Image (tube, rainbow over all chains, first blue to last red; front, side, top):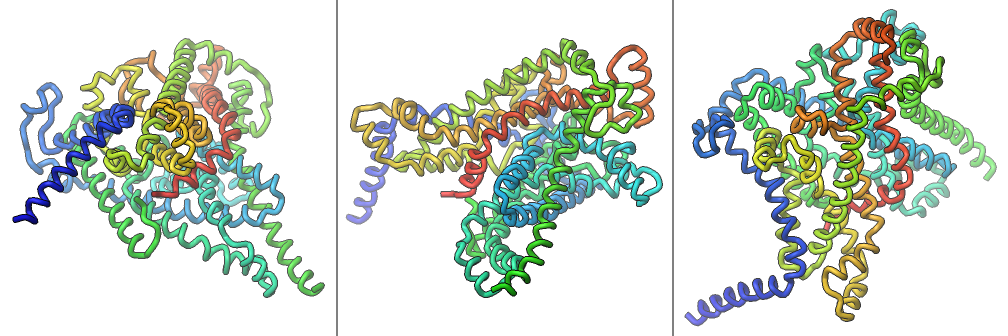
Length: 316
Length: 301
């Protein structure tokens, strides 16, 4: 009895101190309050809009007069053969981008780490960041020119007699994923290498010295010191990126695709755009969006869990 | 000693050769598309169709630029793009700084709540359609403000700035508080000057995103040509070029060129240069900040 009472006063007291503290900290509350409202309006209201997927939404009627259809939209989604094509494309494109992107970024970081002329290193790095900062609209224009039938890549291939007539790189469905993969590398390599280079700066120089005294060659030092030191970073970034597997990069794919390759280019966002805004099947498109989000969340949490199990740094 | 030296030097030479060849290839592959586009933009449009323009214009002209910048819609797009970039950067930097300051205070009771609210947005979003309807409901469609409000606060920037503020010596804030400075004064006078380097990173990210974006124009303001941006104008040029096959583009170019107009290829190149040059001029100067900022972002809690 007495114990219960003391618990009660404790909760009251805790509540009291919460509001007392809130009042005491009113300057901070006033400074942050607009941004609480902000995030709710601009980020959480759209999530509330997920109810659309359980209705047969028509904009002319108010949100409360809509016909409720339960999971009908999801059933239609899973029955649609295009949906599986979309799922395949999204995952394949993400996986190709992830693999190629990581491989080349690590390679570049290892190579930059071997440059002794610091001025040359700095200039190369500065240049390598440039593609990261430009819009995909610009990048898509450049990629299109490079890969055009009269573009430089075809010219080089023809001059080397590797092909006898120009390849329409952007028109071959089977090539599309690789066009996306390599244009991703082109745009990201310099930027992505930053993280690995940062990880390399924390390697103890004594290790290299000791290895040199033991007669290890430069390649051996890379293999036995630098690469193992990068392993935690690689694992963390790999896991982080697996959480992004449902996100194939809308702008890039949208801007580089065309009618000829659509069966390999249709990813979730393009599907939502086509069905939602163009065909006005709002509820159906929302259902697709929800599917993507939910799978993403599951992936992120699994990734976080795996990272924790591997005794690595947690993601959040 | 000498034996080891010679043995190492052979491998050294090979490795160095590989390193330098790789990096020079990287530089060429990175820069060539840009330089080629610049060359095409300064070359006579009809002459470019013959091909063979690589790094330098063959028939030099500034005609493409004069023609393009004389178009009222391009001129308007430049104004809108500048306005959205400046406004969203200014608002974004200030908002991120002030909110990051409050949630960097360990004793703030709402610290955990606000942080969680924002971190969740990194992983979950409403998706295209619900977002569209919410923005329409808020009266943001067919309006300039759809470029500004959704873009001013991003959770990633917030975390970077919060981490940075948490690294500042607490004594600075304490002594200001003892001197009787209010919280807002502390933020403006003490915190803001100290976090300039990280705010430079936020400004760069926000400005680049604003300058580069076209999708919001495409979704929310397609019927408002006066609200178009440079990147969207370029996207339209790209989209129309993609629909044509090269031979059709060639034919159209011929026809257009006959009428003393710029060719589609020349328009594309010139627009690309106009959109790219401001960014290419700014980012190298902020390099030391963003490299640092990116490594900061990786440090959580």
